[in-house]
Structures are given as structure tokens and as C-alpha cells.
Image 1 (cartoon, rainbow, N blue to C red):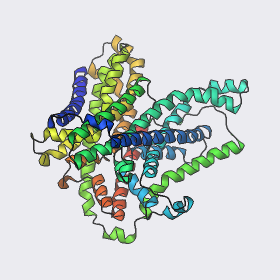
Image 2: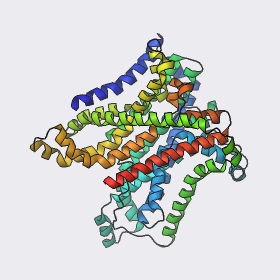
Image 3: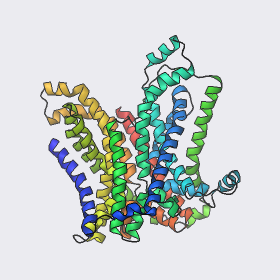
Image 4: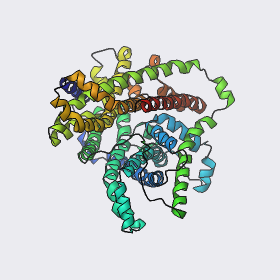
Length: 520
């Protein structure tokens, strides 16, 4: 299994190496170093950092009070359903959210007149406003789940001691809450910053012009419209240096148990009363409404006439292709992630922290490598070798797999480390072979494995960037069909297709949660 792990690490690294080789080998000029003194480069770099910084900061700050409400008020109605909605929001295909936001807050959106009245007629969804809204919508629910799990790790004895010492609410917040959450908050901020810094579809759809362009979109424009390889390469290395460096720092300081399931374990904690309880309840119900509005807007924008007009048969094939590609990518991605964690677990057991962090970064490096650069680089590398039009869909699957591996690694890693800490010495003393060890390990990791599979399956069904390079009309996926509808202002058809895709994602998460609960 250790050999399979090294091969898996090599294969995922090879995709990135070949992609950059494709870009470097296509032009003898190399990166356009003159871009460093160009005001255009400075402006897009500044906007990339600004939108990622604001998105991460607002997502983390807004998540904190919601997580507090969930923790301190266990009797809140539909609390588990809310946590499930948070998970769905984080893994939701971005085009579904974009369609919902346009239906709600676009130029003809249902709430646009109200928002225009509040902001004095200056409201415009396109630009920094829309980018921040979309990023907060996707990442704030994720931060809520992480903070909530961290709150639940506060030992009961801390609260009981604080009551005996008669600490005030401010002292409890400063001494107990902040000390418990500050490490998680920093890691979470860095992770969300990297996600937003690498955001592509949201900025492309809601950016609205050159003033709201990020490095990722500039790379796409340099390659798609200008075919300026030196400029794209310079932008790509800049993005990789910033996002990769930050992600390495985040990995160095550790990671939280993100996206963990709600165990529903009852703990003892102070119960707020009076205005504090009412404030928490208000924030909880307000965030419910905020998360549901873009989804409900998809339904409100569809009339009976739209339902009769649409060719439902045209949705069937893209839906089947999307599900088929998702299952293939998720299955291979899970196998690769489990295999590459084998040598990393050995480093963890043998107390080699520097090597462990380095290879964890290699296993998850696709999270920071620009997806557009990887797609175009691999496309250029393969262009003289194979018939891309014929085999392009295969590389959609390969790149989709490479991009979901980091999420699978991040989710499986804590559980496997936990197994090693509890059972490694026992399995070694019993001299179990690989099959016997797996028989013990599988029941221990089965619950996390199933939830991880559901997550990467949903994530792999929502990609657009890779398909825009390798896809063909014969293999159109559902997200690409939505993009086509939205690009031609067929918002009703885009809404219907988005509802189908959203329903699929929700069904997959619900199904695996049921299976997971049965085997927990």
C-alpha cells in the first residue's frame, strides 16, 4: 500500500508538472517579467487580495455569532437541518448560486427594487458587491460548522470552574471562548482566503468588468482571448506563490476538523437568558432566511409556461454525464487520497513533522494551483500528442479527480491519524497483515469515508473551468448547460437546470447521511 501511495503522489504531481511544462514549452520567452512594473498587473493583484481578504474576514466574523447561537441554545428549532443546509451551501455548484443571486438581486431581480431603495439606486450586483455576497454565502456556512465543532470541544469542567469563580460573560468570552477558538479562527481565515483567492466562476460571472478582475480570471482572459502565454505564465506563478505560500503556512499551523458531522452529544454549558438569548435567536433565524432566499429565487423565477416550454429530454443526457463523471472522479479520487495518506501516516508515526507537512502539501497542492492554468497547460502539452476533441472528456475526468483529491485528503486525514494513535501499536504487536488490518480499520473509518465520498462527489459535479477547455458539445455537463443558458440570458431555463442540479446534490448528501447514520 505504501508503494501505491508514492505512485498516487507522483501521479497527482505529474499532472501539475505536465501542465506547467505545456505552458513553458510552448513559448521560449518564459514569463513576462515586464508585467511586474505594469499598472494593470498591480490593479488585478490588489483586487485579488482585497476581495479574498474581505471575503475571508466577513465569512469568519459573521459565522462566529451563528455558531455561538447553535452552541448555547441547543433547543433551537431545526438545528440539524440548518447544519445540513450549511454543508449543502459549501459544496453547492457555484453556477446554481450565481443563478439564484441573479434572480434575486440582478438587474431584474425580485429584491432589486427594495435593495435599490435602501442603497439610493446605486445598487449593482456585478462587481465587488456580488463577489463578496457569493463568497460569503459559500464560505460562511462552512465557517459556522467549523466554529460549532470547536465550541463543542470546550470541556464541561471549564464552564463549571468559571461558574465557581463567578466569571463575568466578558471574562468567559476572553478566557474560555477566545482561547479555544483563536487557533481555529486563524486557520479558517487562511483556508477561506485561499479558496476565495482561487475563485474563478464567481468572479467571471459577477465581476462585471476590468475593475473587478482577479489573477485567475486574468489568466483565463490571457489564454482564451489573447493566447498570451508569457503573460499567463507570469500571472500563474504569482498566484501560485501567494496562495501556495499561505496554504503552506496554514498547513504548518494545523487544521480543524472541518465538515465533521454533528454528533448530537449533550454537554453542560451556560444557558443565556433575556436579551442575549433573543439576540442569538434573531441571528439564527435571519441567517436561515439569508441562506434560503437565493435557493427560493430559483423557484420563483420559473413560471408554468417556462416548465412547459423547456425540452426536458435535453436535460437528461447532461444530467447522466454529470453524475457519471462525478461518480468516476469521486471513486478514483478517494482511492488516490487513501493511498497517498499511507506514507504520510508513516511519517506522522515516526515523528517526522517537516516531511509530513511537505508531503501533505504535495497531496493537497491542487487546492492552490490555478485550475485554469492546469487545464490550459495540460491542453497545450497534449495538443500535438492526442486527438483532444475525441479524448477531451477523459481529461475532464482526470483533472476533476486531481482537484477533489485535496478535499478527500483533508477530510480522511484526522480520522486515520486517530486510528493510528489508538490501534497502530496493537496491530503491530499482533503482526497483522494488510487484509487483517483493513478489516479493523474499515469499521473505524467507514462513517467518515462515506461522508467524504458524498462531499467529493458533489464537488466534482459542479466544475465549469475544466470543461470550458476540454469539453465538447457531445459531452455537455449540467453546469456547462446552465452556463450556456445564463450566458444567453435564458434565466428561466438556467433556473430549471439549476434546480435539477441542486436537487441532485441535496439527494446525494441526504442519501449518504442516511447510510452513514446506519453504520455510525
